Length: 115
Length: 110
Image 1 (tube, each protein chain N blue to C red):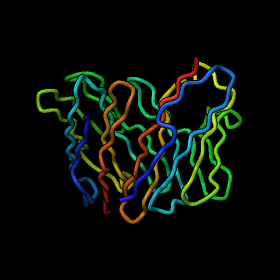
Image 2 (image 1 turned 90 degrees about the vertical axis):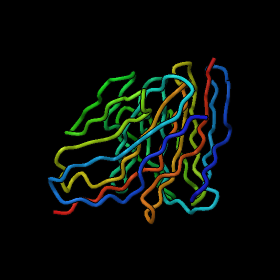
Image 3 (image 1 turned 135 degrees about the vertical axis):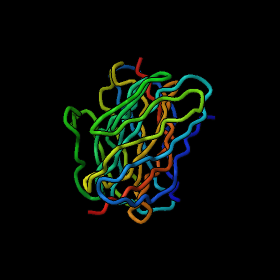
Image 4 (image 1 turned 45 degrees about the horizontal axis):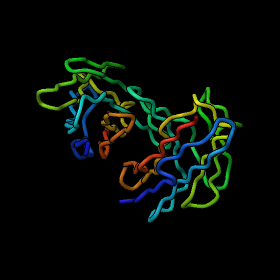
C-alpha cells in the first residue's frame, strides 16, 4: 500500500511565526490529499481537501488564509500555519486515498506546539 | 504501540440487512474510540465515538459499545440502506495521537 510521510514529526515555535508541514506520498500518485487536526480526546477533524493543481477545498470554520495548503505535485502537499498562536497547537495529519482499494493511507502526523 | 484491527472488506449486503463491522484494539492506557465514515471523494467524517468503558456511541442508526474486557468497538446497524455504502474506519486516540484501522468498505445493494 501507499506510504505517506510527514515532515517534521514535531515542531515547537513561537507565537506569531509560520510553520510549514509537508505531506508526501512516497509510492502513490495522489490527486487528492486530506488534512486533519486531532485534539486530545476529540475526534479527528477534517480541515481541507487538497487537490493537485488547484485550490484546496476548506471545511466550514477553517480559515483558509491561516491554513495555507499547496498541492503542487502528485506526491506533495504542504500545510502552512501562518501567524501561529497557542490555540493552533495540535496534531496535524494528512491522508491519501486509493480508489482501487477503498482505503486511506495516513501519514504519521505532525505535533505542533506554539509557545 | 497502539493498534486497531478491523475486518477486511468489502462487506456486501442487501438493503435492510443487519450490519456488523468488527473492530478490536490494543492500547497501553484508556483511549477514546471512534468510528469514521468516508464517502467517495470526501474526507473522513466522525460517525460516533465513546470515551470510556461501557459507553455506547450512536448516530444515524449506527451503534458501537466500548468493551474494555474484550478491547472491542464493533459497529452495528439494524437495517442498512443503499446510502450507507461507504468506507468505515475504526480508530482510537490516546495521548494526543490517533491510530486508524485499515478501513472496511460496505456495499449495500437495493
